[in-house]
Length: 155
Image (tube, rainbow, N blue to C red; front, top):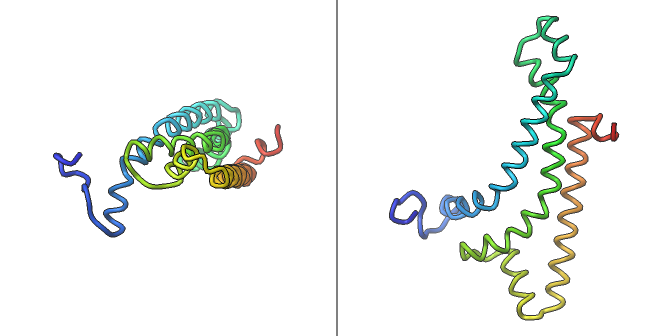
């Protein structure tokens, strides 16, 4: 990307930082975005086939209202759940992505600590990783409870 002059090779400030994390973020998120998109599409297709959507069309509701009030609310649950399941993969993928792009971060610290045999640092990385995963899954469950109450009840 340096010869194309699309993203800078150096610089300081928030703009340069955003430009530097663009490619690593894209590389890290390809797998997660594809799985979430696949689940969202499947959920929306299934929701469009439900009888309540047909009833809303018959009642004359606008397509926008049908989509946001009925279809999206009931079809987004599986994709949010997949996002919660993919979060640990993002943490693990950070090690590889940071190594490829030469960026210091949580992944590089974890890999370096493991290679040096620094047991307290590795234990700290594991504790922080477990706390992040638990908190993220708690947030996913809260979002699922608000957006799709039926999926939160296990129905």
